[in-house]
Amino acid sequence: MLMKKLILSALALCCSNLAWADGSATIMSGGTTSKVEFAEGKYLRMEAPESGGYMLMRDDKLYSVVSEGGAVMVVDIAAAMRAMGSAGQQESFWDDDIAEVKSFYKTGESETVAGITGEVYKLETLNQNGNAQTSILVLTEHETVVELSEAMYHMSQTLVSAAGEETPQSLAAMYNNVIAHGMGILRQGDEFELVSVTDTAPEADRFRLPAEPMQIPVNR
Image 1 (spheres, rainbow, N blue to C red):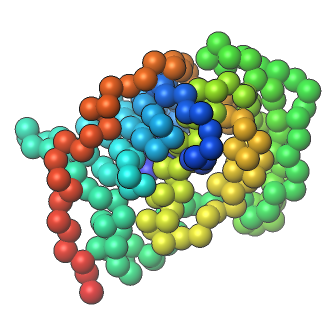
Image 2: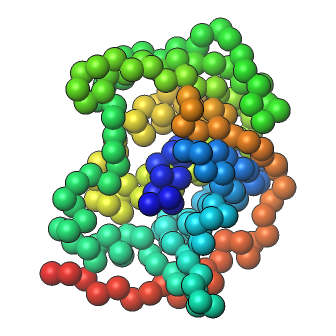
């Protein structure tokens, strides 16, 4: 699903001791451009124009909001996954290709992304087959980018928890090497790139649920 792909590209953790820099951004992931709005380290809205809906994070929960035929449907993602029961556990939700992190270091180079200059890092890992792989990341301490990354990681972690899975190596690596050091991601290889970012705070209405979540029967 498109929204799943968008969420899986997202990285960051909500840290309550930070001074939040609300804002909005446009990101490119998997060839898809999406708009992300975030506030107070706990609200995030992500939508792609062609998706017909959006993902909303609030109150430590994730919701999928879809408009169809004039009707608005709101789905609590965790409740939907619980309703699927064992059918939803046949394979891991998070397709993690990282088995082990070998090294993560600064290359000494810099790169400008979305008008922001960041430092280039190299992440060397082993995949599930034991093969070496390398990923290039461009990182920054730009306050708004850091909060964007933190909020998107929070969304990803909330989704993993909803699926009843442990934190994958790829997500743990990004927290340990990036978020924990107060940095945000401008670019990650060809998988993720920040197109633009602004520190203009979104309206509070952007993070309100447009309707009550649907009641989903649980499979037993």
